[in-house]
Image (cartoon, rainbow, N blue to C red; front, top):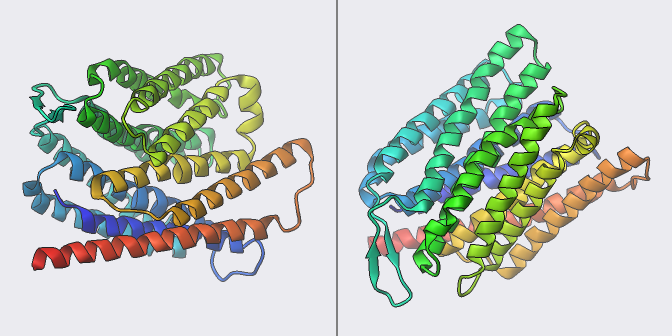
Length: 411
């Protein structure tokens, strides 16, 4: 199934997300004409639901569906993009109000539509594993890679419960209440710890299965640990609102299971003939992220970190720009043969590391009463500009490559 043109939409949302983030950085050093809170909502929605949702759904359709599924998927894709564009042109002007809520709600319905579509059609996926000797071994059972992705779809559906509970929480306890934030964090947890990572792990296991250097059945434990750990670690999203010991205990056990899962995947991947740099970065960053999560399951750490806004922002950016970003870039190179020049990857990595250090340092400075440089926000603008240059060039590559592919087909 050819989804190259869909990748263009994803990267368009990526560069818009970077621009919105850059504008928010600029707002700290100059007068701006926009409402900062409204643009913040736009930045988060287009980043999560535009860039990441579009790229991940396109990647799994490319990998697990047939070309004959393209036509019905195209109708679904257009409806989804209509919702995303609706959010893009409503949130900056009114934040959460009638129109942005309508588009957001219809987007959730589109994710249900996509979930049913993918689960139904991917069952027909005929998995063929190529051994080193190039002989073919047909597996009758559903491959482990597809099981990971299916769990990603289940987590995508599960996450939406948090969105539907938001109005209930507003009526019962008020906007901004602990119950409201708990529902919101429920949604976010099963998005970036469930749906996002399950898909990327599924594609990773698919790469291992294709190489056939180890039996994927040995990785079943990684799947079980990941699923149980992801479900249980939702409690870590609630410890800041409900100081119950049982939440920490469940979170501690779940964090350990997630660490075990990622370590097993990392060990399996490193047995490949030529482990790719981008995937090694993804797995190492994912390991660090899970360690941070595991540390958050200890009360004396959670009580310090969770109230600190800079630490929370640093963690979220670490997840989206680091873990998810490097994982996506790897599979675009691997599955769609899109080459990202070394200089652009270096620029992106510099921007990522530099901005993470700055944001985390400010969190430490607030905690310990340390000095924050006067040019702090100017430095953030500089690093955000590096993001824009790198991602902007990738957009140029994506649009040029897809256009050239279309010309080749026409000829």
